[in-house]
Image (cartoon, rainbow, N blue to C red; front, top):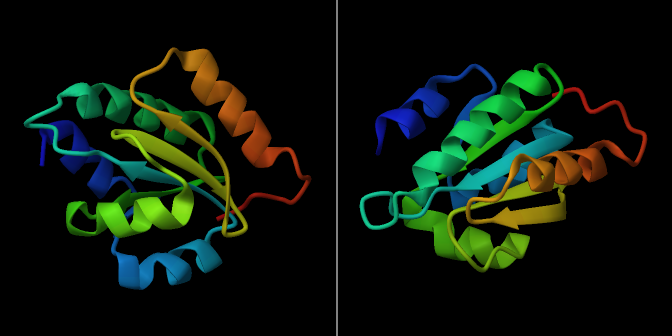
Length: 126
């Protein structure tokens, strides 16, 4: 795990999510990001996405939870969330994937996905 990913894992709004705990995590958090890092030793792009995720947590502090998908379960959780390319961030509202931003994109892509995440009018508290 890279230092950036380890720092995210220690963030108060973050927890590591395994396939077996995914439903529980999503039921406790009406608005969540699921971060699929991929293998950052083979594809360092995941480190760049980690910086964006950290900024999203700052911008939406108290309104958003982060699930760091355990690398051992990425493939099975990908299938449940519509993620096909790593690294990726799935934006999930009330257990439903609203959007997925795959690979490193500019800030606008993440900001637009976050807007869609909060667009249905529920309170979004974690």
